[in-house]
Image (cartoon, rainbow, N blue to C red; front, side):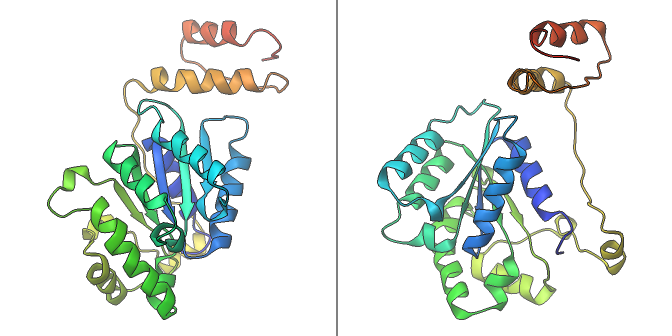
Length: 248
C-alpha cells in the first residue's frame, strides 16, 4: 500500500542480505528518487551504496560500476542497490543484463525486487511488453524452475493488486508465491499506518556488526553518540577505538 513502508522493507532486506540487490522500477523518476534517499540516509555509514543504471551514460562510468559490482567481496558488509527500468536491462545496446547475470553466477546477487508491479500489469501495453521481455531475457535465467537453490530472494511490491492480477503475473513470469508469503494490507492497517516487519538476530550479531559500527563511529568524529553495552569489555573496546576526537 502507498505510504506503508515498502521502501523500508526492501532496503532492510537488501542490507541484511548484503551483496547486490537489483530493484526493477517502471518509472525513471522512482529509481532516481530511491537512490537519492539511500545515499542521503547512509552517507555517514558508508556501507550501503546505490546506483541508478538508467542515468549511467558514459562507458567509463558504466565499466567502473560493473567492475565494482563484480569484485565485491561476498563476505563484505557492504550492500549495493542497483535500480533499473526494464528498458535499461533488455536493450540490446545495454551491457547491464550480462553484468547482472554474472553477479548471479558469482552468488553476489542476493535479492531481486520488482517495485510497483501493478504499473506493469494494469497500465499500458508498452510497460507490459517491456516486462515480458524482461521475463524472457533475465528473470527466466535468474529463477530457473529446475534449480531453485540458485534463486536469489524475490520481493514483489505493489500499492494495489488482486488475485486476478497475481494470476496474470504468474502466467507472465512463471513465478508464484505461497499464500503465507503474501502480505495483504487491510483497511484497518491503512488507518493505523503501521509497518509490519520481523527479523532474527543470530548469536554472532555483535561480531558481525563490530566492523561497521567502528567505521561509523570513526567517520563521525565531530558528533556526539551514546552507545549501550551489556558488558564492560565491549564498552571498553569501542571506547578505545573511538577515544580520539569523540565525546561520548
